[in-house]
Amino acid sequence: MMILRHLIIVIGVLAVALSVSAGLVMLERRLLALWQDRYGPNRVGPFGLLQVVADGIKMFFKEDWIPPFADRPVFVIAPMLILITVFMPFAVIEFAPGIVVADLNIGLLFFLAMSGLGVYGIVLGGWASNNKYALLGAVRASAQMLSYEVFMGLSLMGVVVLAGSFNLSEIVSAQKGMWNCISQFPGLVLFTIAGFAETHRMPFDLPEAEAELVAGYHTEYSGMKFGLFFLGEYLGITMTSAMIVTLFFGGWLGPFLPPIVWFALKTFILICGFILVRATLPRPRYDQLMGVAWKILLPLALLNLLVTGAIVLAFD
Amino acid sequence: MLSILKGIWVILLHTFRKRETVLYPEEKPYLPPRYRGRIILSRDPDGEERCVACYLCAAACPVDCIALQAAEDEHGRRYPEFFRINFSRCILCGFCEEACPTCAIQLTPDYEYAEYSRQNLVYEKEDLLISGSGKYPEYNFYRIAGLAINGKDKGEAENEDPPVDVRSLLP
Image (cartoon, rainbow over all chains, first blue to last red; front, side, top):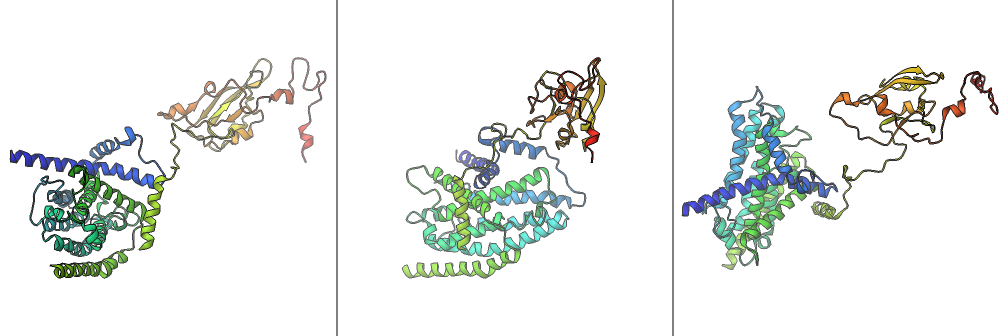
């Protein structure tokens, strides 16, 4: 019985995460269109909802071409790697009381480790493509993700200090009195910025930078391999939003509605926020990106941790 | 920093703006009557073909998409034996309409003639000829230019002025 329950949760999380990230492609196009006073895809099915299916079918039937100059095995492994590392953190997120794949006591560290490993998919993909644009994108991705990783972890330590645990379920239940978005506001801002950089979303999409680098690290990818990179990006958005909800917005906590609905609602709003930021901000220059990370955000994260630690110590 | 938040707020307010897109097949834009779209051949108010097969349209056409062959009926009136426009070449410049001395060839505000096969874009005379007189409902070329009939040349009939010698108007 226990095994069955676990299986259902695992399959459910997989299916929901995959379908959400596929639906996000359509949602993003519709929202971007809305904010640019257009309509976006509204032809296929009601409200253009079947656009997702059409895109999926198209992606599957495209020629999956591997360039002859590419490093074949690595080229094939890279997109899988990116998808796996993005999928893994879903295992430790508690969607509702009891609905969690693996209630790890180091859940937060697991998430940080997986987002750190996510760099490999991009770097290997860019390297194996044997193409200068792909390589430049990959180099940028590695530098950017490493820089933002540092204060991403540090910005979360305030939350850990408040909850006294790395376990995500305990972090959620520690927010019963007050959500962390109030007590850890600097942490929220820092983690959100880091989350944008980790998923290389719009203001920080320098690894892709289609204006300068063709398509960055996935220049040479086509067919479903490109689709996996794409899916990885949208899964990353979902995962980061779910993470922000868990860590700062009280996870499934909320009155009246069932916990799972609260979680989904908060995550959805944050995903829309991701798209809103994309609709607004242009990409910074590369040195600005690195400079901000090391000179401003890292000291801020350290300061936040220091102050939080001092307050917790003083009140204990 | 503040400008970033302000920008995000402005974009969020765009949620409530009117959308600029014209949803084309359901909602069509207004096209003025002189819009340069699909080409037609018109008839004069008596229901005769206006075209006198003078080849001026074919000569004016910059992409050579008009082909025709002149013929004469039993009264000596010229008409095109065939008249062919290749719309896959036509650039809708309207030079043919400008060149036409009898207002026979006209461009209409219709642009929906896409085809799956290129060959279907070659329009023959029966496809081009309409039953009405198009943009110039009263105009009849022969009422103005005169017409020779059996026994009488132009301008020799009663209440008729002799035709103007066009060459005398030259500088």
